[in-house]
Amino acid sequence: MRFGVLGTGFWASQVHAAALAEHPDAELVGVWGRDHAKAKAVGAEFDVAGYGDVDALLAEVDAVSIALPPSVQAPLAVRAAEAGKHLLLEKPTGLGVEEADAVADAVTAAGVASVVFFIWRFQQTTATWLQQAGRTTLAGGAGSWLSSLAGTPFDDSPWRKEHGALWDIGPHLLSVLVPTLGPVRSVLAGRGVRDLVHVICEHDGGRASTLTVSHTVSPMSSGIEVFVHGDAGRIVLLPEERAATRAFGVAVSDLMDAATAHGVHPCDAGFARDVVAVLAAAQRSLETGCREPVRS
Image: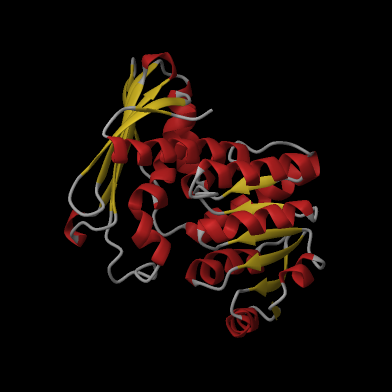
């Protein structure tokens, strides 16, 4: 399958393009960027063309992988789907339900395959954890991801600084809590110091989970904790660290499999839309101070 990468930042070059260039069954054809000079520079790293015209790249590929800010990604994903291209997307697929709906609807209307890169879902440790959780009667769970963007390649990311950890790393926690505990029906959210956010999620069947996220803690306070609990005790997820490129390679294979089989991937644009709906409800709750329903 011939792929084009849309984006020229760190994640686009060091994860998307790097994984595609190494993949045995995918061909990296070119890189597009809003800055043509950057697109050519990233393309040169992988010995492919850099494009300034997105339609010119779309004409040369079967699929695109997009590593751009959510509100830039969404309209380009719709454009690519309408052109009949399969989609490998980043989370979140929008910064509101309308954007995420537009992407999911375009995928359905075009009949293309879609996979959204919730990184943990493409790791074997998570697959094993989901199997264990699936054999257990669960009552609830919790996820905490405390981080510091300072000194990282994402420290100069305007959308992350504007919208905070809720929208950036909240999707990762939801990507494992939703399939284990069920759809989220309502949320209550509260703020802490800087961008720290706590969210209480009400799932189907009376189950509940809590999320805690921040991009602004002291580096010494950074860490990830995820677990679900039930009749078999506490089942702890230990995500693999520094394995993004390998996980992205799995996502590439999954997209190709879904495209070949005309199937629906568990982490498709529809699932990503439901994650965005939870985030949007949490954002409303932060503003109103009330429990907010999740838009179905």
